[in-house]
Length: 329
Image 1 (cartoon, rainbow, N blue to C red):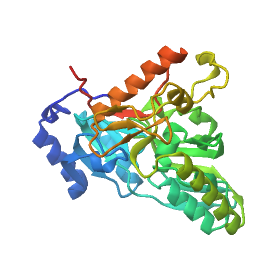
Image 2 (tube, helix red, strand yellow):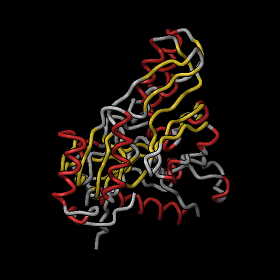
Image 3 (cartoon, rainbow, N blue to C red):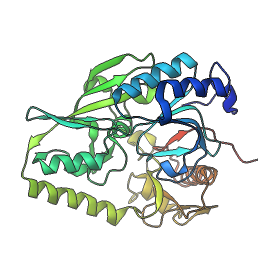
Image 4 (cartoon, one colour):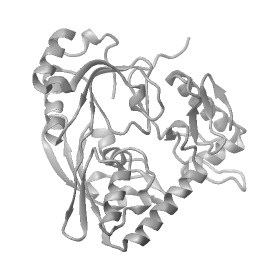
């Protein structure tokens, strides 16, 4: 997700107008230039994309990968806009916003969902049809593609645990069908975080269930999130990964979670500009409506530094940085 140029006119092998003309020839009016991205992310911060394409089907994604390669354009993929922080300097090259999505049952034990399907949409679809195994993901922000990318987790389970296979497009534009084990899922990890591949669809292992019971389970999951997370405020979700046992010992009584460490360090309510550490959950940074991405990043660095000083644990981001960040000073 690097950004090799600050000037949109230098993104790719030709001038800005030439690149724009080529993109419009391929995608028509669905591609736009100099598009503000703040409204497309859950943090509500960030600068513009040089070009934005909103997809209508999987073929659009494959074509976008191939065209970006041909034009030597940086390519960024955005789903629901959660779990990301877009730099105030914007995103160079072509940003593909995956907006399409279909869901289908494959037999009685597998459901396939396109990468652009929202996780909440997938949960609703499954419950309405008496399909169990997905209800705990009620309230999960973002899309299936994003959940696969970062192996979304909740209440001790990772989404990769129920993924049986995934459709990908690689950097050359070739379509691949890979198994769940080949996805190399781990905590906040999958192969696509490192390969640059894009998720086209994913298949999930499911079971038959009673719709009323499944709905009750989904409501319980959503209620827990509402009690423990600042869902009414602009944020990107959890900022840091929970530290592992290899990250060092902790004082007695301190849970091995990023939120607990930030809380015990006295950082709840800490502010940089319009960015604030949530009083509800220490691992959430929220915007008061005036935050910039620079505010958020400075506050992230501050929290990491204080926790490292107090507890000897270096927190690692779960959040994904996208675009150009201009460091203050």
